[in-house]
Image 1 (cartoon, one colour):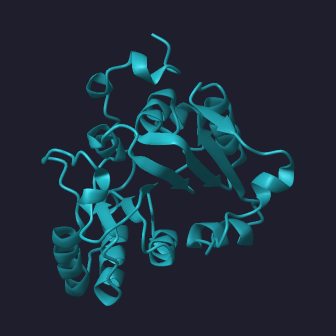
Image 2 (image 1 turned 90 degrees about the vertical axis):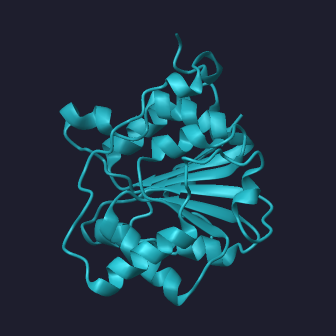
Image 3 (image 1 turned 180 degrees about the vertical axis):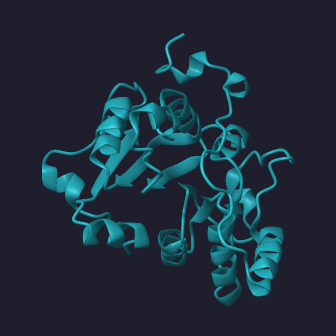
Length: 238
């Protein structure tokens, strides 16, 4: 079986990748714990229920399309984009409990009805989604797993690119940002080897220039302080 041909692989037969990394950090304060509980009740995606035939029906407000961000961390970018594009639906995935709590505290202060959240393994959500339903996927500063023996844990892989190909509409974009050269090169190699994706860049400036209206993230700020140059890659689903 050729991993670059997603239609050759039944979606439900693909292995679900285990989440590698910590699930929890320091003990949450009562306010955070309460916000997390209430926030997931209001914004959480329940994949035990059948996915809607039209993904836009997942949202209580009218939206014209849906974008996904995997591993939103502190949520700066996701909240910025959801607030900037009120007519687009956003789904954010973050299995780290403390980051999800931070997000739900922020949503308690500034609600975003065009946002939905999922707090488990992103591959489970990807396998639940209808085919050809997403207008974009963002994977921004994912864990790089820098040791070579751990590279197999990186989220960008042939099987996960198959998943992306299943759920992205033709012409939709997969955006990847990282400050780790080996992961940038890894992603370029895997996406260019996959028949469903094309890299649209002509010069180095194209992939060293932040995305439109880019708000920055705390991970990016740390990388710049430590003199690592971020890369911003964009691949189009063909």
